[in-house]
Amino acid sequence: MSVLSSEWLRALRFQQGLRQVDLSNRTAALHGRVTQATVSRLETGRHRPSDLNSAQVAALCAVLGVTPEEWAANTAEVDGSTGDVGVTPRRRYRPPAQDSL
Image (cartoon, rainbow, N blue to C red; front, side, top):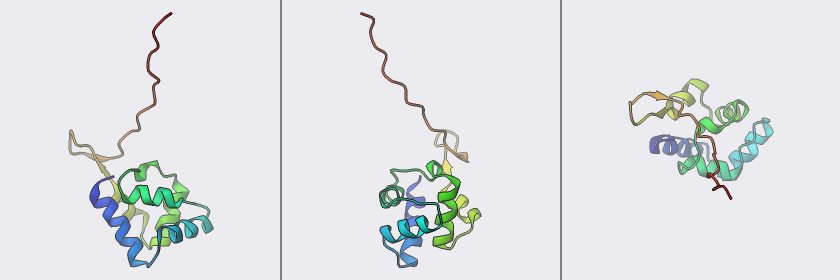
């Protein structure tokens, strides 16, 4: 998530007068719980919006008063190599190769 995306999310939360824990509790009531830790990670750029499931995105949109289109436009990830906007694929974890005994 870009710095602008994280700042946008934080600004929305502040506009609603919500603490991170309040946002978490309200998303839980809408069956799309986003934990306080995840909200923090989203706001600091350590968690990508593309990692959220559709229920979480819908709950955040409802609580923050934005449309899914606004969410997508403000949280789109940019591929630094091409400048293309889109979802950056997750890297799969691959354990380190172990030497043969």
